[in-house]
Length: 615
Image (cartoon, rainbow, N blue to C red):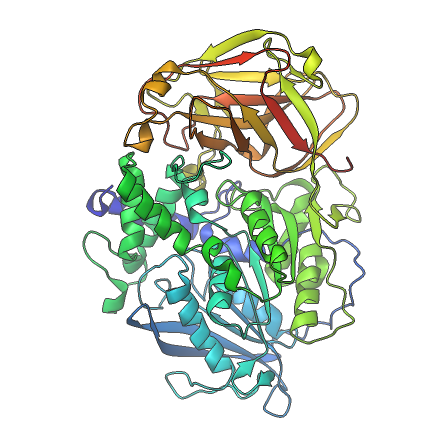
């Protein structure tokens, strides 16, 4: 992929994202506004927050900060929201926030942070992330050494140890020690990961609320859902990746500026060089060993997966169930890492994410995008989190360890379920040779079935590009002869799947075996697993349009696939369908034709394990 060839498209994409909102994929600049609007109102045993002040009960001061980050001098464009009555003698804790990818401090999503928390007595500092809006320097994917360091310099300002470029200082923020302000961070997507990046380099932060963000960009953009895949690269998620890449490359024209720190080179206009090279390699469709190791190492180095061990700030994770960009597995991985090392952490799975989800009863979640924090479940959890960790109100209950939104519940008092832990893999189904999904190995019929991939994609799950430019998507589909499916009997009672299912499979593919030891990992077999809900009338629904791409590590051995996490009720009379497809048009697929056969026999067949609530 070359910038010269694709930049005009990128400009069009970015401009369209600015003015249109898809019903299914919220525009990038709106993600944080939605990230603040997270659920239906549900009674909680939380201390009621103070009544919000009137909208004119704060002042807003535009500020510029020149900071050193990544070896460059970067100008950070920010707005300081100061509540009335807050001064040196009456200090208040602070909230720091920034935009999602492609946004700025001025979009309706980001300035909601400043307004909402200033109205509730918090000092708020919102800023345009590096490379966005009128902030300088390159887009560096929330690298802790660059974006984290820049945010840390803003913490210096809140702590009273540095001034803005015009000399403005902040001596009205609550401090735990000289230069150590009481400060939390909140934001969504790109504005979510930067919180963890900042906490990794600055231990003065007191609370984090990262929403709909990533754990590992290598998994997000090039996922391999095979357990233990090691250094085997994944399957390029080309639509999401190129959509955001083009938006990023178009920034200098969207926000005209003579700041030389915003321009890299003709080959890579607006990103740091490593990010550009990674995208170019992924678009090449080739995975040479040396280059692949380099790109995976870079993607992971700038991701929380590599630095979470340095994060000790109390963290409330909020992730979206409708998200094909950053699915529930990302937040789950972050949650488990933080919990294992003793970092205070809780997690909420809300209804919506980058792929929509604000339909039906979930439309009430939009209340929060207007700053109505008290009227939604997640909003009240956020307020409680900050009241506990920023206002040090030790009596405040911050809620359960884990909560998840149930879209099949219409009673707003019961929409969220809570638990002390994630459900375990409690239900096992077996892949029978006759295409049935059975509940006992003794019911497995002996048999074999196969499919053959085409050189063009034959399955469709979703089009993230159509969402980014505001176009409707088409229903999911699979072409006969290019996939295999296994279907359960009609359910005698509802089945609530909460979490990430796992499938253990063994396939036969002689052509894939012949390329097994190729020096280019792109020659390895690729397949896609997914779950459907089949209604009594035969209507098929691909659950949340989620798929699990797999580049099989070793086609001569069985392998286990972790599917994306879901929260889904299979109603009585519905059937569960497990599918292995040869392709998906949202991803790169197989190189060459690679027929696949799956053999089943009693005592020797594939299995599907489901995490079931209440099991």
